Length: 102
Image 1: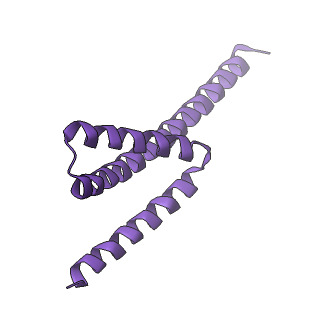
Image 2: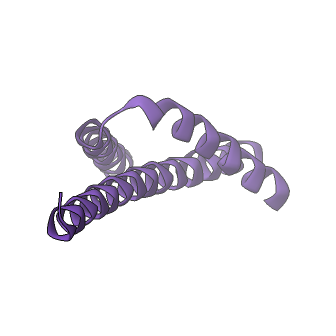
């Protein structure tokens, strides 16, 4: 085994590590963005209903973020994107209901 084979193996290992790390970072980023969006939405709805303060708003948002992060940890990136699409469609449906309601 020459130096060329060792360098080729090293380059392959580095390439695999970078791919794995970038996919993990993308997975965490998607979970974080989904959790923040849902957390903020649910916290704002709760604030309108209950009229609680800023601390409770942030606490509710962090709790929802933690629940979403834990729930989506076992899901693949495709499943998370489909979940995001369903959430967007439900939000658009609720927006349409609010605009049409008298």
